[in-house]
Image: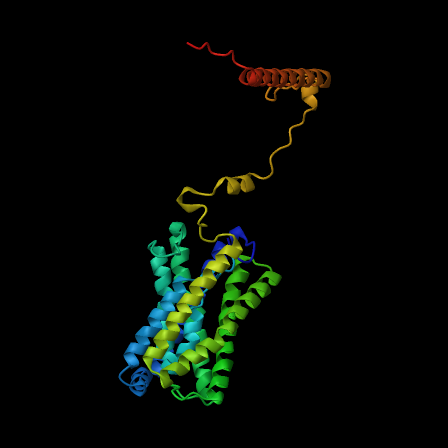
Length: 347
């Protein structure tokens, strides 16, 4: 189950496929163009990061891919992926090109694993062409917002890679992170509109999605600053903490949505009797009117009230008689024990 109940138009498949293809083509062309225009940026950034630069890039890819595997449903078609937190932490360090490519490939890795039925989120491949188009659309879903945020960071006076922590750098980072979140939601809203979601539902999902990501911005900023202060080990420690927290949050979201993990009481054998009783609902109340009329087949016939009273009186008399007989037996036994014995003859 999902956090937000949202009905979509079952006949929207053609519209959704068209939107996915548009996002895929436009996002891929934009990313390829930026890569060509900034062909020297990746080498320059890695050189500025020092010998740990390649390790940092690999670490961010693994971090983002792991968070993408732990995503959960916002609606039946839209997911919340805290891989966005890794993208926010990444772009001030890795720049426009590397960050965008890592964001797209990390998100696509989760999709491809799901299409191969590997990992916690399996992708239903009954409509394979739609799922491939959805995977292609990740070029826009994550590639374009990450590129826009990184470019904006430079335009606001930020230095890539950002190795010196400061209040000004944190402020620029925050503004660009908000830009990334808003851009992601604007792109996803086109898919929701194609699915036939109502405008109140689109606004509601955008608010919930954005609020989740906004909470993670301070964590992402500290992760960015950790590299300049501690090195890639600080980023690794922060990433490990982020994965654990996200896993816990995902489980809570699944429980909240009603699709959480199996409880310990259920074990491997399914829900217990109480759960079955709750699923079945309250026990039916038998209508006894047909019993009095003599038409009941499945319910035992109840004796009239007069017969029940007579039987109760008879049982009471029998019980009193048994008690009296027991008392008399005990009295006779005690009398026999206390009676004087005849004197023995003396030889």
